[in-house]
Length: 69
Image 1 (cartoon, rainbow, N blue to C red):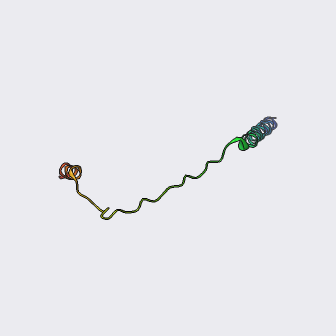
Image 2: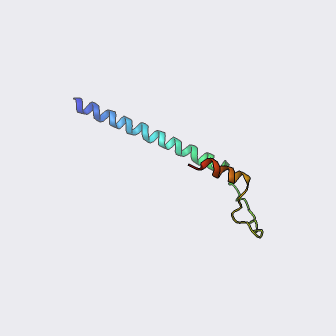
Image 3: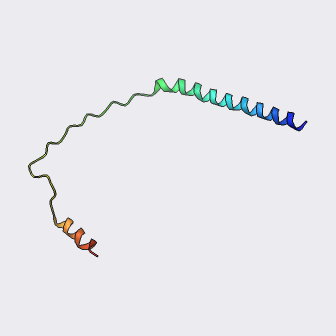
């Protein structure tokens, strides 16, 4: 008798799970066309200006002084 009660509970759980998944799928189908697609942002590359390498400035020197052990 105990096994049949467990089987009934498992069937009920499966039914409720299938119903909730189906409802979520139906909502997704209705909502998806309403969402706008994001358009890609066009970026322009900044051309390198002459000497754009490492430049030691006052704040960099301060950082090195404070980081010294």
